[in-house]
Image (cartoon, rainbow, N blue to C red):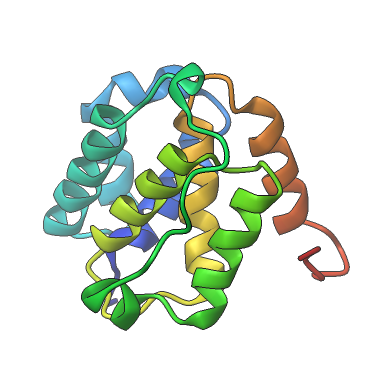
Length: 157
């Protein structure tokens, strides 16, 4: 099975993190669970590095700037994120779901994935994981979660 970092992260998020954040502290049991689920040690290590990068870049929501400049995407970002992804990020920021710092964190974590391109669904998962990890973002996380798991599958944007 060819898995990516995102596959490991999604498995972790769906089976462990979203249900019991305390389990995240015990990496050995998480790693054993991932190995039993069939993920390779290399991909598990990359996923843990990705999560460490997310934790290191956690920010204080009170430091967010409102009404900052428009984000201009460049080179590798344009290659990895198509127009739908970039538009969705702009929409989330305009709606107050993401602030400028969180948008940059989403971009950082999206670029850290080992995929040449991300589709909109992949980006939405990255956004959800970033919001889950941000203090004071509970309402934004709940909104994003609702949008992702609606029965009709239509996103509001």
